Length: 164
Image 1 (cartoon, rainbow, N blue to C red):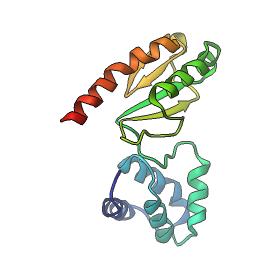
Image 2: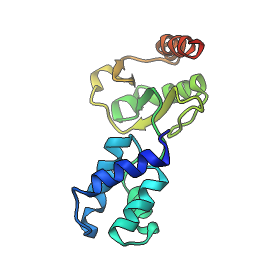
Image 3: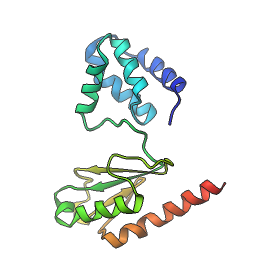
């Protein structure tokens, strides 16, 4: 999680590159998310103030688009594909298995910040369906039993880091 001071520094830096025109709302949201990894409330309030528009308008635009996140991603961000091929290959069972293993739901980040979970429309690996991605590594031909296998090394790494 970033501090309010860090948010203020990032948005001040980004605002220097943009005019105070409402047409810059989406580009500002995108730029801040690129820098911070998500859109904290403080950043959205800052955008509203900068563009001199109501906060609810910023929130409305940000929540309209799927690309924006409002919580930071976990260290091991996990994506489950639910595109047509994965869906037909029982992707829903894979998603449920991942939720059980991580003890979080889609759109959440674990309290310790280690794992986060996202459901996407397509990863682009249809021949390998069903597919999950953990921190940029693709796991093909998944089954509910393979989910635990895929996650075990990340869980072990997280435990080692917590001990240090």
